[in-house]
Length: 358
Image 1: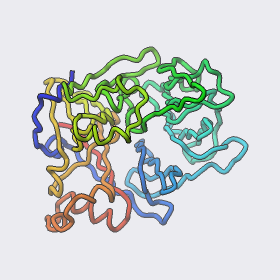
Image 2: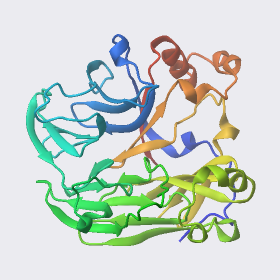
Image 3: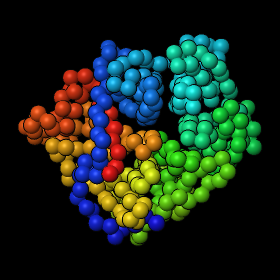
């Protein structure tokens, strides 16, 4: 149980909890290198991958080397015989090959030099793809299906082996003619874990772990009476409820991440974004209000990715929108926030911050 309702808002800067900080500025390499909306980050020994969306919601994959130098922009695969749709998502397999999911549920594997390797057609509609340390692959369908898809495959979650064979299915759904289906955006709710995948329910308080053998509760976040009970609104669209959520509830549980010693997530306390850090050894919860450390001389972005106890966060142009730029520029030359801000202004590209928790 991760207690939130009786935990104090500790007022700490996440910077006080971290060590081994490394800054990786993504360098400008011409218009093709520019990031706009980052929906996924992946880091391997050889490359940094960014799933980027432009202002038309078209996705492309930007590739940088480990120092942040731009290498390649993959807007689509120019081979119509095996790639028939725009990019939806990607993973990197155990052999460091890039696997791209398109909007027609094709999986395209590229070699390390980004040349074509292989193609696989999924028998179900997929919106997202993730890979675990155990080389299991999770595909999330977000309640979608296509005309030729068997109704026996009407599941939101599929676990595949490394050869894309279905191991297990979870979260069945049905399509009722004439009835609209409403689903919340899921990017960020599914994250890699040591044993499988962590899955959070955006309007609930439960973190599940999903593997090829089971889906079970891993963490329960105790919001007490401030919990939004989604079971009363199973088909609810978020937008009409937004004023109510912001006024009354703790909600929006998202981005579940864990290391050997800690569990982390983000949520909204009414309309205030909050970071949750749970020390598994001490069973203690720390709460962070990022609005209270704006313009701090040393500020660390909340992580979006966990790999082998290394955490990765992103400082981008929008990160500074609520900050007083004059205060940032008044900091000394050694201020990490000042250096990051100056890089972002010059390169229009973000800085990835790699660190570990103490």
